[in-house]
Image 1 (cartoon, protein in one colour):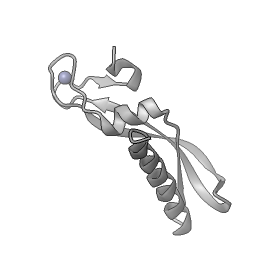
Image 2 (cartoon, rainbow, N blue to C red):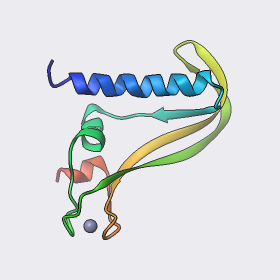
Image 3 (cartoon, protein in one colour):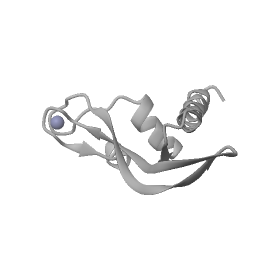
Length: 104
Ligand SMILES: [Zn+2]
């Protein structure tokens, strides 16, 4: 349970962020799908580039999915929808890594 706690807090933060965006009519809805392992890789663990050993930085990529109604915890809003994915990026040599590639 002790190890799960930071993950649960992160999940809660993501949900709250989504709710706030919806409430204030900021009209952007981000859909984020992360497995626990991906959450660990992108948020909690430190990773280093396999080519040059530089510290990797998390970057978010948003894919526009069109406008529409979305419902977050029973609140419906008309919003621009984005699907957000992450990758780890090396600013030194420009290599990018997905979660699956980090632990090979
Ligand atoms: Zn590098």
